[in-house]
Image (cartoon, rainbow, N blue to C red):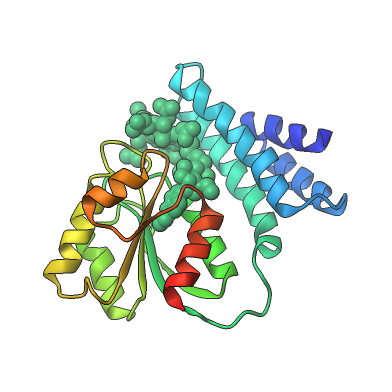
Length: 210
Ligand code: B1M
């Protein structure tokens, strides 16, 4: 599994083209997409996150690592998705207002699509009204909110409140996630579901749709 360590290390250095090559090589070796994601790409991003916290690397290094992560994930996308599945429902997804982190949100989107759920991606820095209006316009079954900052996770409560105000709270499930989010936070804001990772989010979303 040396190649997974290489993927992690090149990701930490932000070497996007090499990460892309190594991810393809790992697939060619028969390593599962899940292992490449978790033990290569996410492991590397975890190291970057620790260094960022300890002021050993700064925003530019994190951004180039994030770019390498996204390029690696793009190679994995067809392998993480299940082919030929019919649309099972609709979800709108976004990172909450004030928050620009999108790697986790993109992973959740990919996993949901892999389960056959039609996903409307609102991007990052999404206001509560935008989540709710998109859910109304697209007759969505689920609103998925991602937040990576303790300072922005409170926006998820505003999404729940806005859905109540617009009269759709009983028609739409609200799912929340992201590094600082917990089950007790989910319960405290009246959201329907918290999951700690993208694959579990997709399972929960599928259960809501059916
Ligand atoms: Co930011 N950042 N960042 N950052 N950044 C964190 C989050 C931080 C923990 C780093 C640290 O200090 N250790 C810290 C937050 C501290 C806190 O709030 N407690 C932090 C900070 C402080 C900041 C800035 C304020 C830094 C600054 O400017 N001084 C700034 C804020 C900008 C803003 O958003 N307004 C900032 C900026 C950035 C970059 C732009 C440089 C870059 C983002 C690039 C991008 O996303 N395109 C960045 C990055 C990359 C990180 C770290 C290093 C990695 C985040 C990541 O992508 N992880 C991060 C440190 C860390 O997390 N270790 C950090 C990988 C990703 C797959 O994980 O998103 O958690 P995650 O998703 C997981 C699960 O959480 C779950 O599924 C995924 C796994 O399967 N999940 C869901 C996510 N959403 C879900 C939704 C669901 C269910 C599950 O249901 C709907």
